[in-house]
Length: 139
Length: 207
Image (tube, rainbow over all chains, first blue to last red):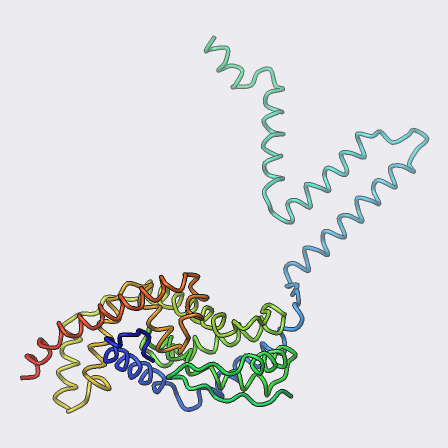
């Protein structure tokens, strides 16, 4: 496997070939059979990419579907109840509550962040809030 | 069933005829077990040698080789490889990446060994008349290889352990042919000078 024209490295290249041969010889005699057995299944199963739905995800999806159905049911009931047209605020609140419940379910933290904003808004709405007191003291 | 592939000589790295390799690859990607067996027979030992050169542990080298072929089989089946006469470059790129990852993982888990314990083990082996390696000169060459820069060592290993042509290596590492040949030349020169430098010291020790 001499690579260079001047052949000045013939000795070292021969030594490298011997080294490679010794590394190949370190393999067990059953290497090819073992590798074939280990990889054959990947060849068969590789044809179709499958999405596996785990137990946790399945439960969450089912719960989300139930919540969604419940929300639709509540909205329909409110729309039918009483001669007065359902206030839009009620419908929006019901949808909003369901949304928060879904958000908690998937735990991406948006519900928590929204809760904090809501609490802050409540505090600001109170005239005797400590924050207002602090502000007045500062003034 | 495509015609059987001739075994390439791992030492010379002579690749099988591209047309027939393409046929065998196509058959394997359709799930033909016999075709896949031919691919494994042709390349498993070369991939093993490449990994073993790095880790020096036959069990680990075999594990990595199996994982490389499992990856390649899955990609072939999913159509993740388009045959353009570059199968060997692709296969050895997967192997090289996997070997590199495995060596990083081992380095993270390594615990420092007491040098005196190593020396004692070598002495015991000598007293018992065991050979510490297959060949003293190969030991020196291994030591020299391990002190090469990573990129130079990779080229040497792909060439001699993987049996790839320079064109295939250039394709694999993404370097122009001239740069690659210069790198190989430099690596060989370094190896030779390191071995020559170490040779007198080894002779002193054996006296």
